[in-house]
Amino acid sequence: MAKEPSFENALAFAGALIATPGLSGHEGDVAKLVREEMLALGLEDVRVDRAGNVIGVARGRGDAPAAMLNCHLDVVAEGDHSEWEVPPFSGVVQDGYLHGRGAMDIKGPLAIQTYAAACMIGKAPGDVIVAHTVFEERGGLGMKHLIESGTVSPGVVIIGEATQGDVCIGHRGRAELEIVLGGKAGHASVPARAANALDLLGPALAAVADLAESQESDEVLGRSTLVPTMVDVLPQTRNVIPDKVIIAVDWRILPGDDDTSLISRVRAALQARIPDVPAGLTWDVRMANEYQLTYTGLEADRNLFTPGFLMDPAHPVVVAAADAVGRRGETGAATVRPWQFATDGGWSCGVHGIPTIGFAPGEELYAHTNRERLEVEEARWGFERYPHLIGAVQSALVG
Image (cartoon, rainbow, N blue to C red; front, side):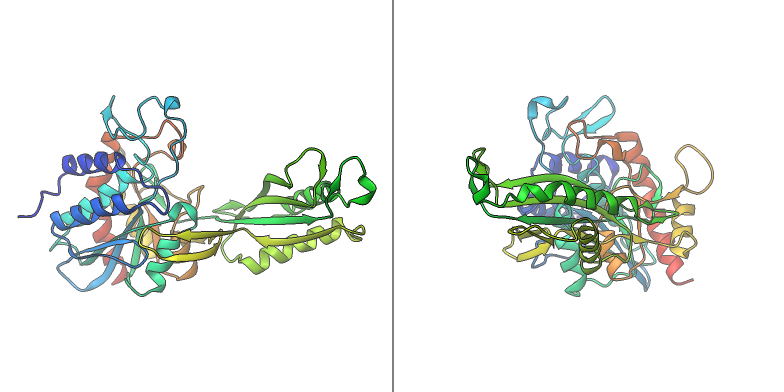
């Protein structure tokens, strides 16, 4: 007999997930719990794909396009445990809140989505795919693999990132670039024998500032921003003139930007600030790259790039979602807005064009902090709204 898909059981499952650490690349224990819970709830075709994503299907009553519910399996590091008001892996309910790393980003919503899908077995207008992905916190390798491998073919995607009950329809993307300044190392006592890569640091930072001033804006998503976030000087020895300086640049991009366009714009800004490069010095621009290894053994060298996306607020899926969700404790349709942070929706919608929205309880201000928490009554309300949301967006796809 299948496990009862009640809110109380979903809350207990969320607590168990929080008590199970799972940084990017180390989600295996979390994935095992999720797979077991899907099976216990009666989901079908439960499996783990090559990347380590966990997938299950709640069979609907009709043939409407499938809705895919998505959260990610990984969390960010918890930091110093002594700085937490409640231990980060406690998963306890205290003072009306579920506490711990992942409470609202994103193990609480993951439990809610999984249980809400189980509630829709035999009731949804079409199948409900539940797909929880790896490596979201490091650029979305899991979602990218999930969509591009053809493992699933949803008609609509609902992302469970925190919206505090609103319906989110997009976000700016994120790209991490590096400006590499080169020179010739030498002893600090004889600077004439060296070419100090730090001599280009000032002009390079000015070029970033110039580019930041000229960023475009979207009336919904806001302004694109870029800012230098780190400077690495090599070698890291105080009596050696460095031959390499790497400036990390965090760029919050608008939909449509890609690696090539971003690099060319930084190059143009640098050329304007450094028209004549002094002898012995060089500069270059590249995307920041990271080797990623999933817990299942899938390897990838990836640029740190997450696309942006934006749904039309008048799209039938968005209108139906807002009407179905409503406002907690009020009348009328839900507020429709973008997220401030990036999600896997950049891959599902921004790259592959699948209608994608977001809905979940939780306040964004607690994400990635040592005060992470999820209000239990807000979570209960979100759980109760999810079946209405699923049915509404599937119906909207068939008119």
